[in-house]
Image (cartoon, rainbow, N blue to C red):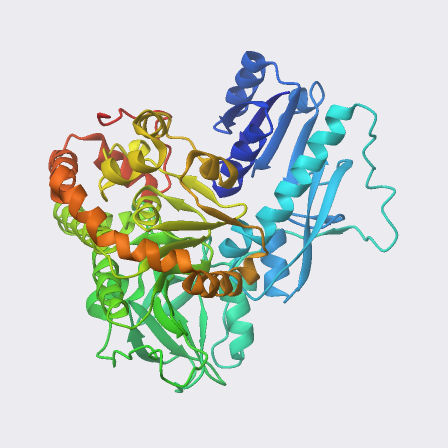
Length: 564
């Protein structure tokens, strides 16, 4: 069918719906909800048979939904209504939830139900749940609703006649007074639920060191203690803050915006606080042989028999210069261990999205920081590419884009959870790209397909990635099962006779490649393009980066860098 997608932003769920509906053979167009006139123009141009809104924060005009069937994806179970559905569920501690696809009508979220799919809500942040459990349920519900619409005989169920046990519950937008943390009385679990319910947007408004901030992200700390609200320690850019019965790690802060000032954006907490931050101990994360405890760290390593698993989780998947350098050190340490398989990743949610644009935007010299960041990313990818004494696996439990997607391609094998979305391109940020993509991408997909992926700059589904050769194995499991499934599969791989034979041939294969064209030559050629984009103040990259970081409108199709 001809399907028009309407969305406030081309976010992770919209990208997944776009990619997977395309896999099913539908003809798709996308229109961002910039204005009602923009929506009307898109409907007139494309004459869709069906309109779907995967993520829309404004109402579809009446003249559109009265003339076309418009399906809205609501991140809540049947009967739930309101713009902060998932926020309320997380903050209330709900463990079972759902996603409903309903037809647009005058009253928001009150139209006939085309599909409703249940899901669980583990104790995770809102953005993580949205990209995983919610996205899985949403995709299932969308595909079911599309099949029912295409069949032509299905009649959606009106909400005035709900299923037994289903109650209509409409709740308002969650405001900051509801999200407020009462440090002197809220126990740790309450603090965590409030932080998780606002981890990406809008954050939890708070006062800290005499200034107003929004807190983003929250993780429990088992050992550190102090007076409620007191800052106790730092780790990897995060701050640890005491609660009445424990403490929490807060990775990111966003400054309160003064009237008339530019929009602020999230930064590592210690970087955001800057000189305001008092002298605090930098507490190291537990090592692989230490007693395991409930805490937080960005990078961790563990061994199971002859398998090493180097896991990392960076906010929004972005990797700053410092984070890349720490990960390189951890990778080299992991390579000193007596393992035959080394897994990179293996956690749920983002694998990686490349350089850290927020940190770059906040730098005194964004061009210099961009250059340092891409060099550090290249160092990381080079370390993986030149590992010849063991099998390397990139295990993607979540989405990957740009440099993060190319980091995965450097491994011997790529394992991916079903439902992940890959964006193996750079053009929408006005960049040519680096991370050895001109070597790794063509060797997996062929030169023509590599050039097309870079030129089209579209999200691709897990199934398409596997078909193109970007993914070697797809794991069809729930997000919470991914880490366990990866560990078991890695253990099986380590004992397979074929693995030893593959490892024995890696050194000779690298030597042949170096004789044909050294890896350094690929890196130098890519970085020549990147240097021009970084240090030319008129290059599109600077405007696009700033717009992206500050969540401002961007041009639909920025000028691309050259494609070889």
